[in-house]
Length: 77
Image 1 (cartoon, rainbow, N blue to C red):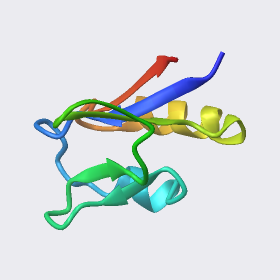
Image 2: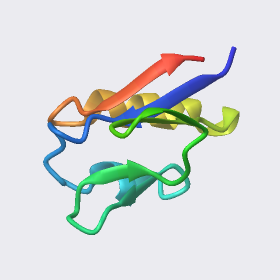
Image 3: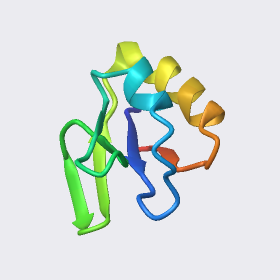
Image 4: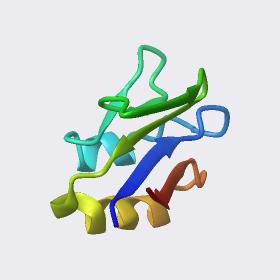
């Protein structure tokens, strides 16, 4: 089963960890807050998911665990 990822914008501290480590999945918005590079699923303005490429799932889960603010949300699709 595929996994998806999103950023909790309100709690992101713009520490740069995610987009420095996995630029294929994460990017910086204009204000430095992290975001995913593309939206595969848009539930609303603040809930936008990217399907994680299978070969990057482990890396994304690791970065999510290391995120100091806990702003990277990973779930099963």
